[in-house]
Length: 307
Image (tube, rainbow, N blue to C red):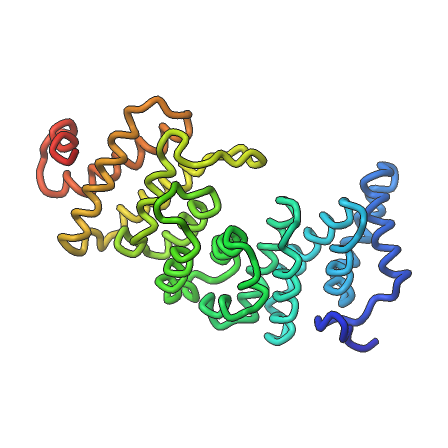
């Protein structure tokens, strides 16, 4: 078969009846328990074929939600397994198609497509700095661009991402309201990138929205995931405070003391359990990094002086 020129993806074209067979197998697996094992074997075999790229993309347009979800799972699995074997130009075409499919999708499907896009980007691009130049990325709502940035560390080798850390944090900052509490996607993105070596100075303007996300009701609860951003925000801030090179300057020390003021106040408030644990952990880390390095003063005295 020839390439599917209408899709611009590295696959042979699927015949309509082939796509119907895949769709029927997905539906039977969900609706006919006695055929579930048989259908699963068929779909596993299909996911290893050349047609799977094209088929999964076409299934995204199915009228059946089970098929749309299966297409996301298939793209996720195939990108994770096979993206490295693609030519970069083919990976770029697939990346664009995944990004175009992100808008308006349900959370679970969007998560699968986002991780698939992260794996394809690792093959298609020299570095994350190339993402803003892609029309399909630029067309995404800010929240979905943040979700993709947060997924990149799952798919890229750390050594390829470290040099991109300043550019990614700058891009993340541009997508964030720095005067409001960070939502879960922003906090999770910061927590995903911080282990690559970011200290508080590197986080820069992100420190304020991350700190605000620790406050009671400071971050909106994600109703579907039933998570608060506090835990991810504290993970990013604690990690930044513990970077070996921190504090590198007097100005950074002042920044850490300002953060300590906020965190130590939070630890004593009546917070939801996850937020209370996160705030207490962050406050303890901040005390160690800002006060205990210089003297053996007691914790209460250090807190009183800092606040």
